[in-house]
Image (spheres, rainbow, N blue to C red):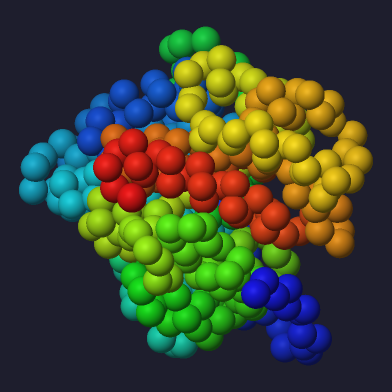
Length: 374
């Protein structure tokens, strides 16, 4: 059953202080076209570019930003490049979950000393705007965490990138910051990766859900949520559980060809505006049937948002002891049924919408059935 774990009092200093999510880097087949999608549909501003024009001969990368969310879209310029090989196996997907730190060297030393596998030795990057120190470690699948120290840098992103502006009209949709990033791992590996985050990165176990919490008639999954000391970084880790048919986690693992980032939750202060804008621009969301709303208000109680607009936009609502939240999930944004987004507005609630799990997973299963993958 769902368990909310209380933080343990500790006098030990945080050995891996994190300021937040620095950026999320996608390896994609065509970064230029992906950048256009995120500008036009999602309202991200193009702020920086790296490629042959900046002296980088093997790749092209576009940096987009909205609020505190920064995306990097990278594509290779040759078939034997690491990015090409990653894309061949996984399709478009998240390669880097980068964390903003004050000391990238110490972050690397502390985590590797505790067992992390190095992905990038501490490296100093310099240009006329100052310097950025970057290091990295491996996590589940081919995903890595980079530690980014930028306190001595004033440029648009980091050395090797030039400032650029969007050449198409861009209207933000109200995205503020990354709320959480969810990883899917193989059966039996969830606890292993939870232990990794606890021992290697000093995270705490925040929430746990078993197959009774997250199940439908056909499938189930298990999930545990880990968070860093200040709660800025939250990583739910999912694994499949036994069910009558293929679960969404198994579908993801099959099409992504291994573990990876399943979805990114983006926070907004006005989910009605955000979802209305995204729908108008062609972003597709999961369908929630009207009968969901027949008893949701009895379960959740009064909220300040207009209930009819909530129903019209298909937004899910849940409440915990701290308040309530509103959330909605896109369909996969790639042709492979892998990565999707969650739009979330927290009104005090610190949980993840347990009361919506059944409706959410039935909606996902309807999409799986259409793809012939249930």
